[in-house]
Length: 179
Image (cartoon, rainbow, N blue to C red; front, side):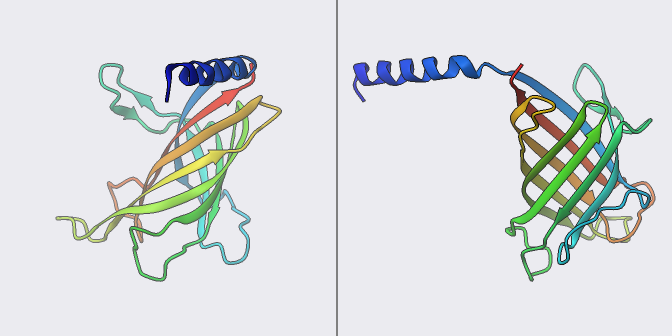
């Protein structure tokens, strides 16, 4: 591309980016499933999340999570569908929707989740750990001024409770607002 074309493209982007100046906000949540939070998912949706939201505390020097729960700050409802008939298919893109309700408002997001690892057996652990990740597009929320965003997760599941192993997810939600 010639220099004049690059300058024209750069000028075009700069002019149209000016009115879109946005604020950026990042939230970090920990979800833990509880039976008292009911997810009203559609028939056929077999990935179901009803959870409390917590705000983890990290060590300033390196980001290590020091406290992942405390008083809940809200709730999370999630619904999705398993798209693969092969058990634990690491290539399956499973549709998933999420609703986060917290003191700052309500955010919704849609996208996919993927099983990234099935760890079995683990020495001294009687069941597998399923590790999954989600990438969701945050929907616009006029009441919060949200125009765009992304929500990603690192999630741990077990087929049954394992003492000493926490299940649930860490969610990073990055949104852009019109403020």
